[in-house]
Figure 1 (cartoon, rainbow, N blue to C red):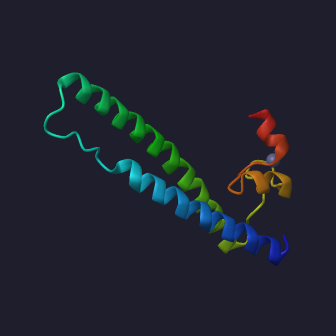
Figure 2 (tube, rainbow, N blue to C red; figure 1 turned 45 degrees about the vertical axis):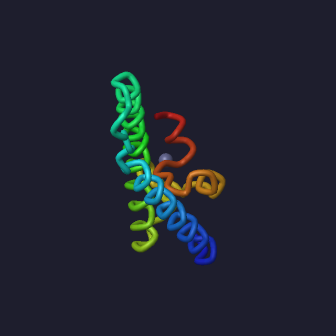
Length: 109
Ligand SMILES: [Zn+2]
């Protein structure tokens, strides 16, 4: 892959990483239950917090993928399918820069 393109993806991934970290941070903020809420309201807020945690989990999983993609860029192995070793088309990488699989392998999954 051309250095110029690689740098572009690297910047994109770094941006995604920052964005996700920010989102996770805000999701983990414990909601302010307040002192005078009735119990029904409290229950729904707890459920809301649970939902936020599960969203945070999804973000964290993506963060791991983004990190591993950044790592691959460092090692010069970025954009190579982990399954078949083919080059992942830049069309795929443009949409999901942390992709680990090429179009064909993704289809099979
Ligand atoms: Zn493949």
